[in-house]
Length: 413
Image (cartoon, rainbow, N blue to C red):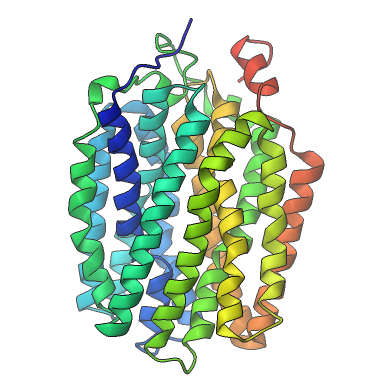
């Protein structure tokens, strides 16, 4: 039985622009927040604690949000609610940069942002099906990264020439085209059985249980690798931003903008390529590249204090993030094909990754506070090397073999 493949150019363009504008909305509540808080004399440990506490809501909601996306048909409405909440919270941070308003905003941002990844992946899979998902996911990441580039450049100029607070008004404004992009996507073209990881467009059977998913050893191994990857990666850019902010004043926003732009330009260039090669080479070779550049990048930051060189090192971040952002979703789709639990699994892995990323922020921040930036980067490099080793020795290839066997019922879901 063939999967649904018919979809209009309008829906395709809607997905493109949704990824583009949503990146503009999300960027301002990311690495720029650390610099914004540092400008109000928040120290490294307090910034790390704030980011950790603020992301707790996101960690808690990732898994139930994934289950919700699997269950309901109104996936577009979830994205609209999330975009509106992000805009409102950005304004709250802009007007009230003190501890409790920022914590409240971060909690709401974390809770609502968890819907974006599963919902967009579900809509994409429901429109194009499993066979075209690798190409579509690469395209999603390309437009998302292009949006990040525009957002980072705009926010850097706004932060330098106007004020750091201005970047949060930028976020609120771009929530409008984000919502309008959703109107281009025809909901009748979304196959809701395929969107949750069913075998084909007519499979409406009961989804697999959570215990069955946990029996899938490759899925558990990939979960561990993903957590360690994000634990090592999450704190690097905020720490770099704080290091650049020391004695740089307003120009620190321009440096952070350059870092984000460098990363996202590389991601934009490499994402579509990653989607194509993931179908030709397989998933694991690409993941080894993504995991391999992370410890190198962390260590390179300990060799120079030159701002231009620090920004240039972000090229490696683009390689790692660009490949991982595309291929990780494809691995999850491979391992959950036929289970009807694609978005639940995506949410569960995002929960675990969120825990790792949050711990990274506070632990690395504490190490930097007591032992300096070099010790913090070296610690993250060790974690990254451990992630690479586990991936290399224990993670199997998921393209064709596991997914094909599962679809034929030869292995349990």
